[in-house]
Picture 1: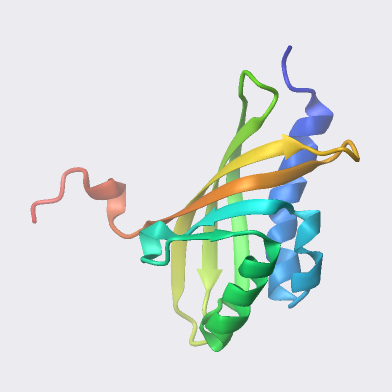
Picture 2 (picture 1 turned 60 degrees about the horizontal axis):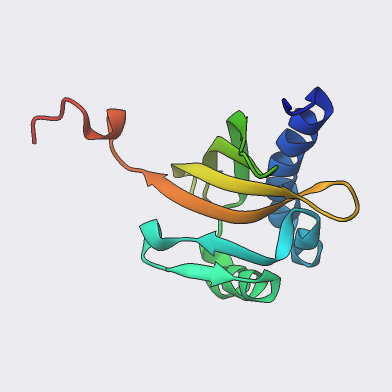
Length: 139
């Protein structure tokens, strides 16, 4: 069965909510976005995997002023997996306090929770470092 339009909209809004909550410092509300046992994979940044909401909050607080002042998400693409989970790809743009920007790709696994809503159970964050992912570069 195809994923209902309402579920597409709910997952897209869920992905967008993350930036609003974290940018506002509302880290105690991340349970509205992630499962309690979320795996937040920052391996591409040399930080490994952060597991669970408490560890995720602690990591954000430890980064302190190194956090972006604004996180923006766009280009959300959703696909249903065979077991009822959803795979979502999106692009993230982070604006730092000094005005510099960075881009990432979020690879999310989203699951339906008991309340009937959706939560991200796994997020892999991939840095966008070179144009065209290096295709055509001459070194």
